[in-house]
Length: 310
Image (cartoon, rainbow, N blue to C red; front, side, top):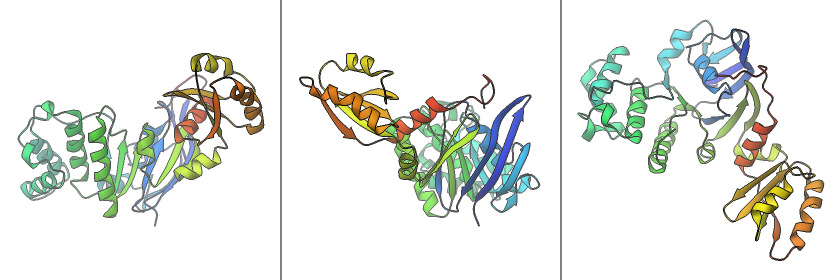
């Protein structure tokens, strides 16, 4: 049985459709990255999946429970970590976790708090006020609260925004440890390195699902061709290439330019004369997930006539 199996989800706010017939399947024990630009409908989709919002159309199951008829049962078995730190900053870590334990009616509270502190490496900081924690430690507290009741599914909404690289890596090490124990994870992120640590990814834009699969499959199916240009005067070359036949993206990467397009013949014809200039080299490169991400963003049409999804 899939942990998430939803189809045709639609959510409207007023006259705006912010999620438009989204379907997704996530297998048990899988880590799936949920990608998309700001306002693409990721948060709204996640909130429907954890029972906080009712779809206007579509349905399916989460952890075997019907999405529209059994939202309370879904809530009990899901851990949901929001974008913003939502704990009491004038309470200690232990006090915040005790509050969460009481919400889930976990008994005895002291034992559940102690176990969670130990599992997340928070014991030494148990008496520190939440408001004095750094971003990385706040993130760890939020994760601790999400897994305290032993959920079967974690829904994480941009959990590492504003967190330093070391804390992000430690967070992802913890996510993989939890998944190895059977926990299923759906995580929205803007970071390409995080997406590449997921078993599969799904890309949504303006409420519509555009792609899903492994990173390699999504990159392959995007049909992009990438060339790398090195040499002097790259700024001028970038300006020169903009809008030329076959050129759909030009982006500086350190001491080189990545030039990307879908028409391989036209792109090669445009770039070949560049390679004949003194000191300039043009070579075939590997298309990155970021190239695909930018291509999706550039090609997406706002289905809400100028509105934004949530």
